[in-house]
Length: 224
Length: 357
Image (cartoon, rainbow over all chains, first blue to last red; front, top):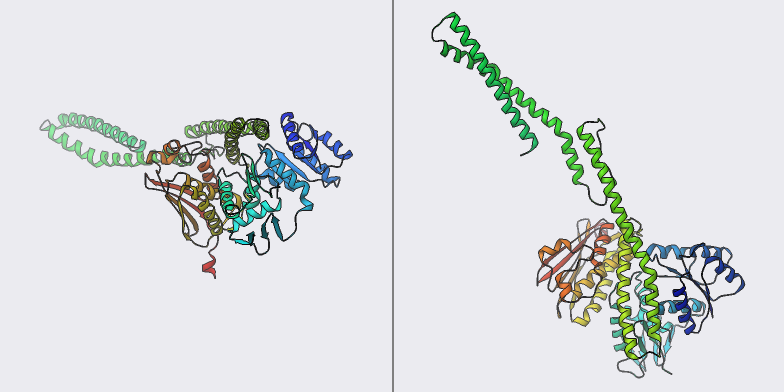
């Protein structure tokens, strides 16, 4: 997977590159819009991380150019303006996802993963991780043959985590996808729900599937 | 005492004084004439004739003068009453609207002109402050992004000791808090500048409240706080879904945070006439009466917040107030210290379906 990072702020570009490389992506970096357009012309990318505020040609204009050229590479927009309206503006301009600054690195990595994987998403109606199974039609969960009662919200949270097993999910992404919140409520809502979910799916079972990555997010995985 | 009464009283005094002078003059004149003509008991005659003249002609003249004066002062001061009403309506958000001028160039018109000039200058400086906050919060985002990113990178570095990573994690928590404060500031600054566009649509408010109730129960669990949804009538509002959910979550979060262990939170949603009335009450320390008017101020933290070391950004209620105002509603907070604190939000309700059916 090859990703293009377009960010004029050198330090930000550098740690984004490192974080994506650590996740196994090949990463190219451009510091302005014209270089980015030139790079896209010669190299096929699986995803683009595009900052809106760029010197010269700005991110939105790059995005327009790309889409005008019928280039459908998934784009994650970054913006320091970070307000509700810009999100809509960016998505309308043809971006696939939007992340306001300051973002969490784990969040960014998780989103780039989701972006580059979008087409090959798990479409099976029964999701499985180890001996945990979740039926997305009847909303029933069971582990090792024991049925587990879930509230509507717990179900959505579990489904979200099970759709990308082994991938770190940032707190903001969970709030966005499971709660449909477009703001950071500054509460420990996600943490408390995860704790409840853990009690239901992990407490009386081995091995543990739901893991916390301190300070960054959560992931559900089948231990090797 | 109003200027009008005072002027009229002065006027009455002056008229009475003039009447006395006229009376005295008349008396002398009559007395002189009588002395020439009859030479007996001139004084009594003169007094009688003078008082006759003073009472029959002078007094009605004084009364007429008084009425005229009353009317004159009223006429002169009428624009002042108008100005007073117009000035009363001025607040920091409508400084751009100048006071209406008569345009006749008199003293009051000139005063209005000068006042409008002052309003324009005030508006200018308010705008500058708003722009400053907006720019400042934007400028803070780039360094914050770098700080968060570098700290997260350190957190993932397996070669660092556990203690060092623990420090990085704690640093990251504080950076996120800072990021939330900057986010809140940006939102409010944009709202002040009228740059936030609400996406208004008819919404089943009772469903949002029910959703929020479920979240509140979860939030309250770690502290053993009981959450109850006492009433939830079906009522719709025209509003922005995300902002209304933010409003409800902010209030629920506060009700749980500023509570006591094993405390209570009671929510209810009612239709009150053509308004949707949402109330949320919580037990706990409460807010002393002298602090109540300030709780919606930005960064205002009461004693309770300091003493309980509650984690928050100090902008929650300011955001609540903005959301409510932007939806043409009202919010009020009442508190009986160490007993109960109640927040009431009223929003214009949509048509009553139960009645229409």
